[in-house]
Length: 495
Image 1 (cartoon, rainbow, N blue to C red):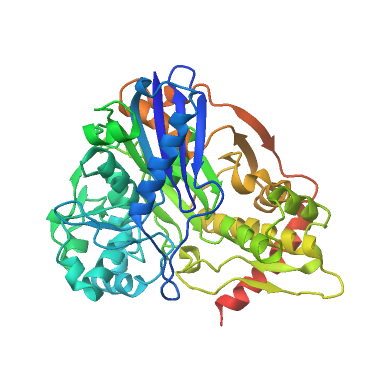
Image 2 (cartoon, helix red, strand yellow; image 1 turned 180 degrees about the horizontal axis):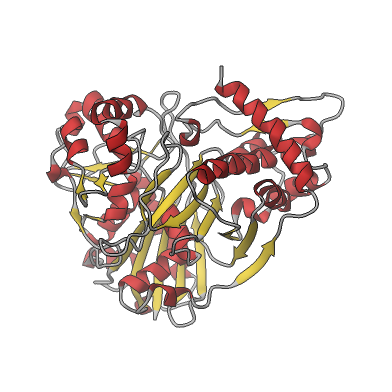
């Protein structure tokens, strides 16, 4: 019995086929392989992608996986989908796209969010929505309503990115409390779609799809799609979740006090709690976790850093595109912690929520033309990203989120020894690295939704711990470097 996981990332699609009994990944495929998917930026601070290209990439990835003949596609029993969070997808009554998706790192709707915040009130937004509207999905929809009224008038249903892939597979459109909360549409006090958001923005409730349990049947693969993709007709989509709740699920981070982290295009620390936690400045954000129910509150407190892996990719591409990431890491390791004073602020990928939605840009400082080499630059970039995690973690600690260790999949930035050393020594946390990823988590989530696993934890009984990294004797050196880095950041914030 096989499970299929689809991970709709910003840069590419990843598909995993998992054996339900052994919980081991039989095969995984990325598409596209040789390049990263484009982000359209028609104006400064804008970020869009075409959902039809997501769908074409999903099909290409699955067709490639099937062609490798490492499994029998007819053995796939359920599909799970994880996706880049906070995007806005709009379709008409014939399920045709109305525009490109306004994705997670787009900053255009901050003005609409601020208007809603002032009208609804800070206290009500925090205590009931657990977030300021900011530039989340609700505000993006308001931007379309205000600036593209002809498109808005044709909307039949609004979706998040994962909903669109599920719709293309099954023809059905559904939502969940977790999805609605990540768009800042959900009222946690009254347990319904927020009347305050609907009222202020004048949104019709009919725009929202049917709300279902997260682990449930969200549709079945249609006959036409089954024939095109060589998979059985009627396979159910039994799980849909944003990439960060899904990453936590894939690491079996499900109960209060457990913490997950990722360092892909963006970086995240995600802590599970049973409290309605909120930050007074909305610098961290709280959403319904994958196992949230009316009876058993489980919420994810999320710290996001937009400019994580994208910063590492940027410096690679502009300095030496032929260099591998491993070669970059080797050069960085030859430089002392603190990069001999060279500093990097990785904030050039849209408005940063932990900086109160400011866009300060990315910056190098203290460049010494007689001292600093390429290795210094690579180390400064990776340390700057790690220091951003520390800065955000301190905000979480201010809000009574406490932990001594975090879990992560051994992937992306966590493949770099330079980065992991900077991460554990600047945060003071131990780091457990596991053999898993988002697509595998989505596949196992599908198994939970299909009833193959009776308990959620059962799906991760065989999760493999690869390595544990502890803070060491270099903590004082990293702390000194962090203090200087923070001073540079605050100089830009106070301009």
